[in-house]
Length: 484
Image 1: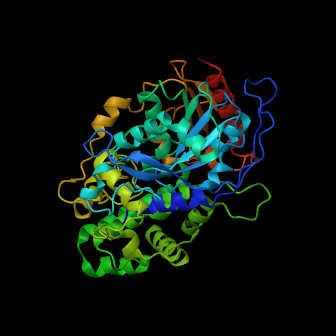
Image 2: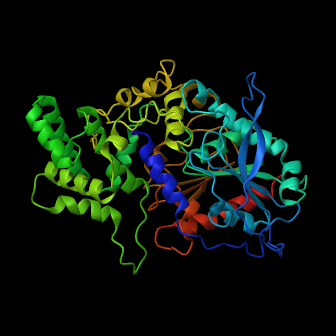
Image 3: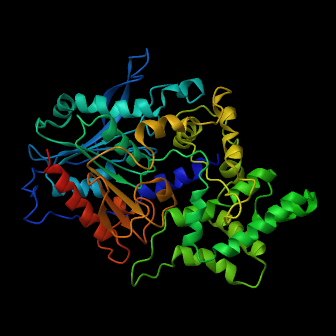
């Protein structure tokens, strides 16, 4: 399933990233850490009775996984709530990652909540179209609010800690979960005091052509790729079956139909840029962007270079082209535990986020056949004719404000190498930290970093701005926590 690919990479990258060294507050900050209690082993999943449909008739409950780290909590300290978004909840984030770093630095308690329909938190028995009806942004946000309202009793019963009524709640997240954090702060200001949002795509966009504009700015070989794509489109336009099939074989994608073949060619480019991290100084690891662009330094025509690059990528990563790139692969597999299927449903119904080829005169790094209409077409095959693939983005953007969310006390963080930054707040910030025009939020940018880099990268790195950003995040969070 095409839309699951970057979600799969995101899940694996987040769960296998390096542990993060910790920052502590200096003595002049409001929340100076004191001696925590003796730590316990942090791997227990607690099950919270969450309501299946907050706004509908089904008020029965399902078991939602919760992880808790109370070891740094001092009564009155903040409570950080990290909804895991489109990935399974992992106890690894109880002792690594920026939410943990903030909790440790501010005497806070950390809660990880698994998003409904992901990981092991299912309110249904299968993932057929009718069963997906409870997967909505409204229900996900209400999950957060309902948990907070019932957290005192649940946390005491789970880990034996009484949370103080004066403790302030902080919604946190990275990527989609960061969007939820922003929107939860907007909808429930009486419950959530502040939010930290890493790479939050707050604009629901059905025709996300801007994605490739960032990829093009980051890749030094972008023009070579654009030249290759232009030739490929001419070949597809020709309807010359012999010629088209020859090039499919050259790419290692001969099992795909023409449209899926065209759509598959962006996987490597997107993955390389979206999860880019420069190698550490003194490291022997090759820069992934330089490695990708090295394929275009040979004297072959750009299309042949791209074919060689893609074929090697498929071989080295053991990718099954039909399973990975066929637009209707897995459509009738209704089994649970398919995070990619859940995310595809959300894009079909509410977000869009279809990464499409831009219209001329903008440079194209993907085939002109990769349109938002083509990407949304399989929605009905997966979820039934009622799911047309025309997402209701207007409702979300109208309520939450799109690129200009009407919120306060939010720390927005983006890496300018991240294609998703085009749908986030503060993408044009010219300094590493600034206060938004309203004076009520803090915007932090990292010029050389990519998607959610501040959320999981090692703080010892000083060569691409993550350490500076994390210092600013902590300062901003302490400022907001000191406010009433």
